[in-house]
Length: 288
Image (cartoon, rainbow, N blue to C red; front, side, top):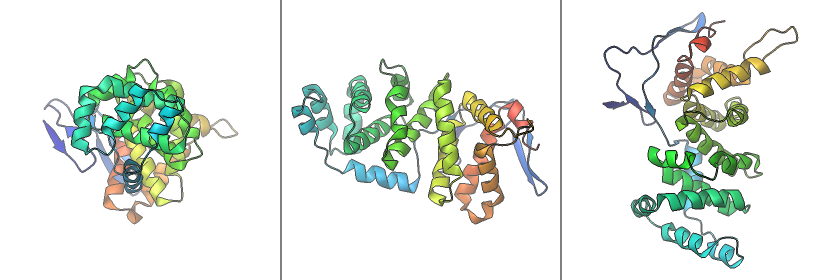
């Protein structure tokens, strides 16, 4: 059985012998945690950031010159046929095509991300891929098991000069990490600081996007440990003591100014802390 807590998250109800952690907020302390059991499965494979959704919509309706890439021998005739089959189609029709040829489209999108460099083509491919895996855990699993390493295909785009490509690649990596039982440590180490820069930004839209990215990543137990470990490493002071890093301290600062945020963002921010508390070692250090 599942209940929908808000527009962002679906949570499976626990059985009677499972207890969720209790988080009490106090004026003299950030939060106090009563932790007992691990969280239930949290279903979330999409993003609801207004700016990101707007950019996705703009990208979907843009004409991409795939025929020119075929004439230049950059994509095959089969690739072109697959791209044209879903171009300008309503989502329902795209879903039918993706369902019929899932493996072909996974291979296509990963190869395009690995081989192409043109901004408009990369933007479109990132949107195609995110649309295809949205609400389909089985497609995410297929992506993670593919011969073309999805992390190798996506990670280079974190350095793209195009802001939208960087953010879109970061969002896709966050979803993959959320569903990957054993995510690569180097990817965790790479995207953690990038998300931290967003949450620590003075731009409210970037802060909100960073919080939503953390909501995905922190569902992965190993990611919680990696985020906290990087916090301690980067927070080491000259006398050898460790303090909270930009990752955690930026969230703490946002929590302290939560009264200036919308109710939904306050919830998402608290949800990030709630996810962190499922690691006993992290929870024990929260009020230090």
